[in-house]
Amino acid sequence: MMAVMGMMTIFAIGLLAVAPSIQHEVQREKELEAIRRGEEVAEAIRQYVVFYNGQRLPESMDDLLEGLPQGTKKRQILRASAAVDPLSEDGKWRLIKVDPQLIARFAKRVQDHNNGVLPSNPSPLFNRYTVVIVNSVDTGIEDEVDEDFDVVTDNQPFIGVASQSRATSIINYYSIERHSSWIFTPLFRGQSSFGGPSNPSTAPPVRPGIPRQE
Image 1 (cartoon, rainbow, N blue to C red):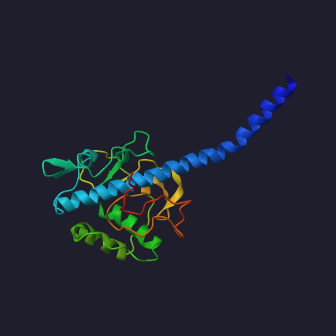
Image 2 (image 1 turned 60 degrees about the vertical axis):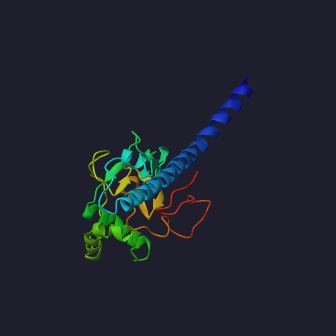
Image 3 (image 1 turned 180 degrees about the vertical axis):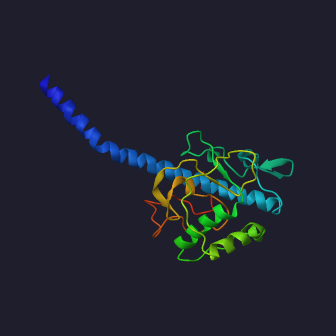
């Protein structure tokens, strides 16, 4: 009996020792999945804006989930799973409206991450949303931490999404270490969302603006 109790004690100690690393890995996988889904939403927004020739923005995730007209049917542009934020308690993405100050801060982070180069927009249709933003970046807008924000998850024209989670991240997305500051938008897409060289063992199999295919 004593031997069994001793083995159980050793086993329990071993579990306690590996628990932090397991928790770290679980959180890392959740963040990777959030980035994958967020990039899919960004690509869906791009397709939506291009389809409507820049005259219309989606106002809810349902607009993206419904797809776009294609003949007598609908063309799917967003998977249902991508409409769920794995980092938010209620699973809802925070909708990012066309706010020059907010998006300019994100653009500055992308610019700094890309060695001072702000990537061009994927389509001239987005220029109407970026002229003021670029001017804000060029005039040296302060890189504030996005701690206080309104959580809007529906009924708002949006150009991107972000998590409701205010937690510090394990993964750096465009060198940003806070979930709520990760903005997934078709604007200002860099070549890589992670610092350093691409490494399949540490980075997700996606690039900004290109959704993972299943």
